[in-house]
Length: 205
Image (tube, rainbow, N blue to C red; front, side, top):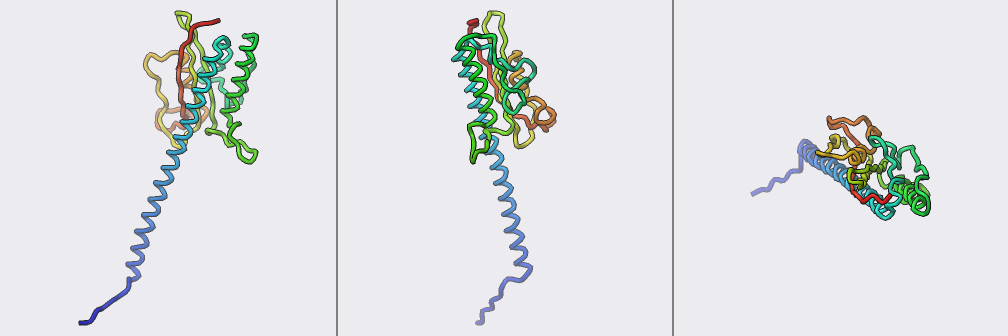
């Protein structure tokens, strides 16, 4: 009995190549999405670190708390990628005021990526990071602070929503960087990312 052997035809070879290339292209697309997701997670982690860094600074220097409240309107002014540099606080004298000024300058540098460098160039921890600090006095004379950190995301998403019963301090923190990363919209075209928190302390002033 004779065995007949034949090689692959040209058509079979082309079909095989198309299938392999399609798989590789699909894999490349998945890898790109994974890298984008990793970048988003990394930036969010950095933003949370910077947010809690400022919370710690304010709690450690409550007597100069009003010096940290740089954000007086809806998300402005802000430090970091914004053109606004920290303004020296003159309303609190002594070492508390000096420390507050130092904290704001240091936080501004962190937002700009001054501590993340390579080859003499600033790498930055986030894309176009901005930081906001707000303050409001409550009816019981306690003080509520809002701290927000915003940055430019990789993919468009929906506009951040306000929780029910939100305070003015929290709203200004959530609005940090508003309209600085394209027009804010609820249509899924929003690039702004923001993390925020509020905390209250007794009025020591």
